[in-house]
Amino acid sequence: MMRKILFGVVVLIAVLAAAFFGLAPGIVERSMNQIAPVALDAPSERALALHKRVTIADLHSDTLMWKRDLLAPGKRGHMDLPRLREGNVALQVFSSVTKTPTDQNYDSNSADGDNITVLSVAQLQPARTWTSLLQRSLWHASKLDSAVRRSRGALVKITTASDVRALIETRARNESVLGALLSVEGLHNLEGRRENLSVLFDAGYRMAGLTHFFDNELAGSMHGEAKGALTPLGRQIVEDMEAKGMVVDIAHASHTAVAEILAMATKPVVSSHGGVQAVCEVNRNLTDDEIRGVARTGGVVGIGYWDGALCSTAPAKFVESVVHVRDLVGIDHVGLGSDYDGATTVAFDTSRLAVLTQALMDAGFTDDEIGKVMGGNVVRVLMQTLPAGATASR
Image (cartoon, rainbow, N blue to C red; front, side):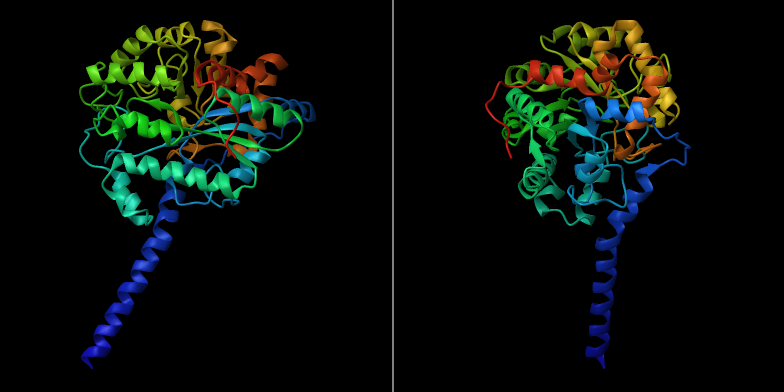
């Protein structure tokens, strides 16, 4: 009898564990990456034709954080290879999120506590990712590498300017291929060690923001407690990134740190995802002085699609933000920064990006201007910043 009871308990535990590890990650993602019930007009034939011609590049997505096959059509979230192809995306930046604070908010967060540890365990990631932030990024890189290998040429990893050039040339031959570039959302994953930047570089990372939602060893966060300046290590890392050919991303950095990064930058700097305070006045977004600073470096402000960036999810608010950047510093310094799959609610997934082409067209933007916003400006920055290289990795 006792053996039967013990057996029953073991079976029950196994069933509950299977249910938790099998279902919980998907349930969590569905609750965090949503599409708002917003009515969107169908793009015109002219808008669709233009959308098909332009090179589309998005500066920020957190898709690698979730337990999904990037190559498979998704029933949740905002992005996967089939939907990216449907949206005619040429180049997607995939970010590595390694730590987020409990009770995360835009105003003030402690570095104590971490939601990603729980997610790593629940998703049955390798045990090394349960305790190491660096290993979490290396795991994300390996996920992308696996998808590239299995894609049979449909997905290529971008690490050099030559890779970008080859991607554009391939797509000009009407071959449907997506370029994927790795980024880091907060270099706390260096774990305080300068030499770990080389580890990330060798894994294929070519863009990084110094901070995420909390202050770290490199700089203050816009959402941290102290919101301080660059540290000596932070200054070294900015210099090292430029020397290696990595794009410096000011998204989430404190206003003080942003000013210091822009003052020392010798290459184009991006704000990969966010908005502008002139349209949506929250501390998540850039001031006019910061936008001017990004433009002085030759960089790009990536405009997001979610409420925290726009104070709305309507495409018209995205366009309003683009208009503000254009009127302030010129059309060459604004682009797409969706923050898809980043615990955001948006009005459309990546398969429906043509609604932005239509919205820009409706606002009177020329075809050339739309091409720059949808991806031309991002491609230019990557060509100017990444290592020269040889050929794309397939």
